[in-house]
Image (cartoon, rainbow, N blue to C red; front, side, top):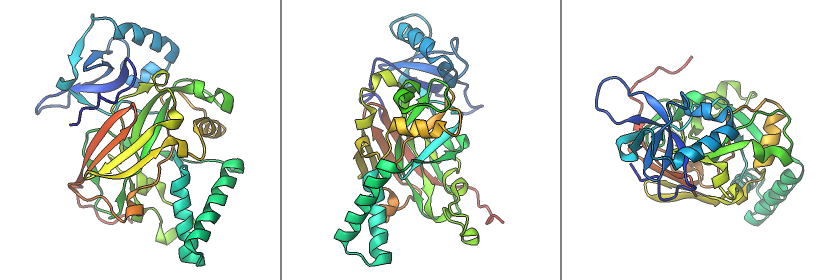
Length: 334
């Protein structure tokens, strides 16, 4: 397991942990406060990490005090298994939200379908993105909490489908309930940030039997282990500028995604305002902000058993997931 600490921002972070143990029943998990290489057991404060966000202002004050208190139960991080840091409520996911990524897709379509030159295609795509940023709205869909796995867990590649792809994203945790949140007030609803890798089976994304309906997000994006999350939740107060952090993904040691969040078409306040116009955002909800250029479809490379994904976002730590084949052999769904 890689060391997630060197790029961890702030005096403390939050996570969910279990004692390393061999065999037997799965060890009980507990919420923990991470300072350096030590973890303060928060079981006497909250049953689960998500509960800390129900009254985030009060939690922050208490956590700050605990971070400097040698009392209580402390563990060495090396003695613990790092689990997914939170069991989210809703998972809201932003699609097509990085300018260079979408420009690449639109330009390729203009060339292949409409016969435009590369220069014409790119100029046309850039004009479209400028107009979308000015007058368009975000694209958001729901993910399943059952897809969440830990930052160092194995990713199980389903037997159905072959084009399993990565999409590394900055994610935020909601810490204050709200509906119809104004953009000017949106950042006050953000409690913490973490890393999510939104894995997608591309060749299961469209249903040939239901072409008029469009994409099948459930099948393509919500397989078990398809949302590695963590390692930690870094409080928003310790992330100085989420609009300019670096997103980097390595596939078998090769850098595939490397982009700043400055390339977002719709920034975090716009995403929050848009999402909250439809659904009430509640503490513990997770909002993914989109993925930059460089996914497997771009490179013509997809995930296979044995592949290793290393994912990093400035100040939030590092994920490392190894891909494995699904041990089951299901029949084709009917």
